[in-house]
Image (cartoon, rainbow, N blue to C red; front, side, top):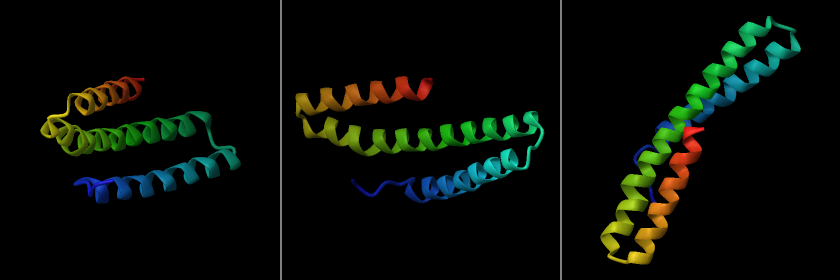
Length: 92
């Protein structure tokens, strides 16, 4: 895997997400109000989508671009199909 421009930002966001998930677990353990727990799960979902956007950006800027520059039609098709699949999954 090539060095990606967003690697540090992704790792920072994932560490924050890890803390948020632990916080949700504590909230459930403490029988906190359901709406408050759900608000936190929505925040985690939103933060995870931000991580996905950064990963897709890196994939586009590095992997997909490398395939385009390679001039190899098979590699280009493969990377294009991967990108379409990623975008479909991220949309859900």
